[in-house]
Image 1 (tube, rainbow, N blue to C red):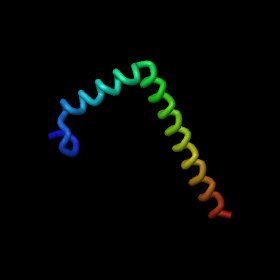
Image 2: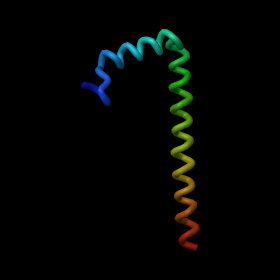
Image 3: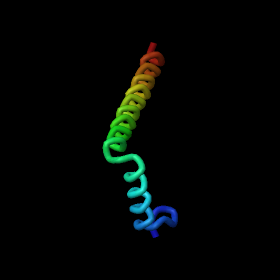
Amino acid sequence: MGFGGISIWQLLIILLVVLLLFGSKKLRSIGSDLGQGLKGFKKAIKDDESKDESNEKH
């Protein structure tokens, strides 16, 4: 058994279908955009937390 009852073979088949539908260049672009979005989200949360901490000190 794999993740939640999905075997490794089922995951590989799903990955292959997604690759065939979107192509490797499109998937690379989506992955890059998602990574940049997560990086920006983490930075915004970190900035917000540091802003809250500085407001509590004053």
